[in-house]
Image (cartoon, rainbow, N blue to C red; front, side, top):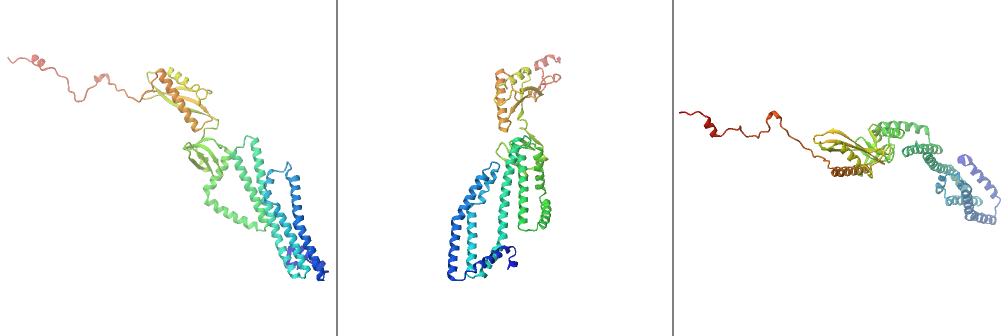
Length: 410
């Protein structure tokens, strides 16, 4: 009997010993009495003792282990995977199975008892594997949560790890933990890992050839993580698109522009693009061009424009604003106004430029400095004797003068 049962030899041995013990009771009265005693004992153990033992064990475990300050909070989060009710029902099922085998052997149903024992012996390894798998999954859950807490604590204590890098590192560690748990689970269930690894290698080659752009974006995501050209919340310009960085994943980067649109860039394009980060130093210099009349006093116009930039809400006093002439325009002298803003963003830039424009326009109007419209001045060259109207012929003397000056025929 032991050979067919394989790993259930212990159960078979226990059944044989129990049968030898119960074979002593041959009379019907003895068997009825023993049956009643076994059933009564089983009911007492299953319905009274088992719930109290599990409840007491759970209380002591929570008090002595889970409430210890060194036990991470993630251990509490997996308590739902091991409910007390399941443990109570497992104990009760074990007790009733033992009672059932005992009664079968007591009343001479040895073949049926051996069959039940063989079924239990065959199921026990799978049950053990299932319990081990649940424990591995619980360990993976606890491990990833502990890693996340430790990584967050470390990132908060240093300055060289930003939120993007923290997220990437956590995802990599999470994948490593899950892969390790997956390999351990396959080992528990006796899968051939060698063949699986070979198949995974060929599959990786096929997937790599079919998803070269995705893999390129994946590698570019790690490059962005270490180069750190921008972070979440930065106002950047990538090629011809600008906006606030709202998300950085391993595959792509998302911007939210001033119009409320979301612009998605693959990371491989981001690494090859021209990136302008306008919030890296938490301040930004803006330029505004204004023209003044050629007859205006340039020095006076510079002072008026510079004074107009004082005490404005969005313009910083340090560094102080600058005004300087730049060009000889067709209709005006060009002045360039330079000023700084802090906490730059697209809406803040627009408000600052509008505020500066209004202030300079009011100051120029108050001082009588003209901002000319585009115009052209037409002048004739001196040697051309002024303008001539088209269709006008050469001037002639009156007829009387011509007659007086002509000689007489007499």
